[in-house]
Amino acid sequence: EDLSDGPAVTCNANKDGTKVDCDLGNPFKRGSKTTFYIILSTSGISLDTTELETELQLNTTSNQQTLAPVKAKLKVAIV
Image (cartoon, rainbow, N blue to C red; front, side, top):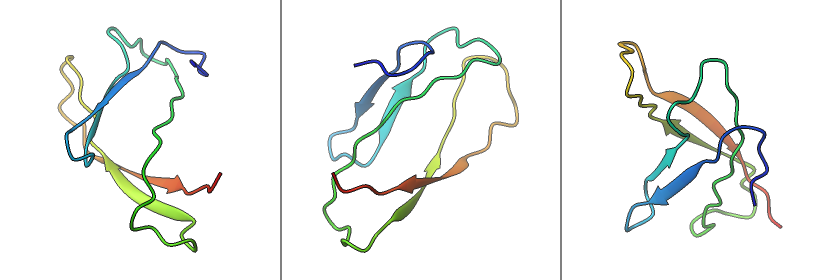
């Protein structure tokens, strides 16, 4: 189900589930916004964990010299 107002997002995980590549569409126009969710396994996470931190490596086909990794905080929800 697409819950975003933006373009459709497709994601694929690697074999061991340690990396996810998501395609936000081409072109993803300047100023565009989209929302998507990645659901992770909870193995190795205690019930007391409320937040995790990860690093996002952004890539583009356009010429952008200063695309540095971005740290993101993830909220942990038990549903």
